[in-house]
Image (cartoon, rainbow, N blue to C red; front, side, top):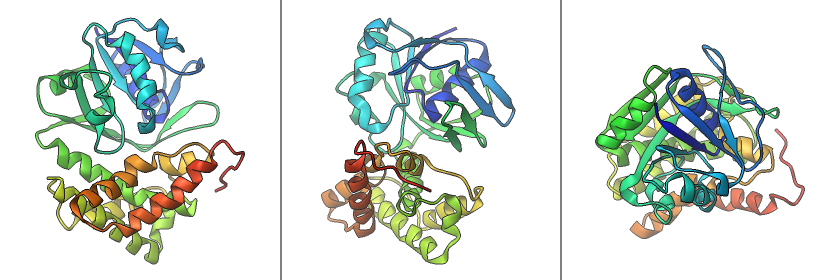
Length: 300
């Protein structure tokens, strides 16, 4: 048994907690800003109710064995407040977030050798009543090594596929290619089905091509087929599937624009690579972020 804390219990954090619950092996703590009702996750195998302690104040946090950080990427400082107590005795911190800067975000708060970056793929949405709906299978990729193997062992017996990868950089950039195209959903305020449109499909391919070019410059191994694979993935989803960027924009919440498209622009500038389409997406979506809290609400 391990003491495992989940920091950030949105859609992804909820799925992680449910997977841990189904192992029947761990003592689970949910770390949230506000008290949550009993967490229920509707999975393809049935509903899972997570039996966990819920903390709402970082000062209440005691030491655990593992911390799974599933906050939004822009809330590293908030996660860091929790880590002061949760990781004070040497807990390993798994960062289950979007983007390619997992270690960089949490390095100010915990030693880098204790950080395990994780890429997750999971079609999931959090409903207004707090229920988390998992639409399909969960897969995760984690950096190969002793800590990666321990992370995988945490989920033994649950319905998740975890792959230990030697080239985590490529895995993270491959996921970023998917996220880059997902900005089209937030820009159009429409779910996955919008990418069946031919013009928008071509736009997705071009946005992914920018990401591939920057990723290669950063050392990721990405071939020219990635764009079509990403587009095929979106077109294979249920047409009403909503990614997290779109969900946040529809709800008037701050979006993870920088971690999904902004990093492509930033690192593109570093390597002298033009990224006009991702730059446009960042400019438009960041304008939406500035409207967050002003009472403006997106509508599907």
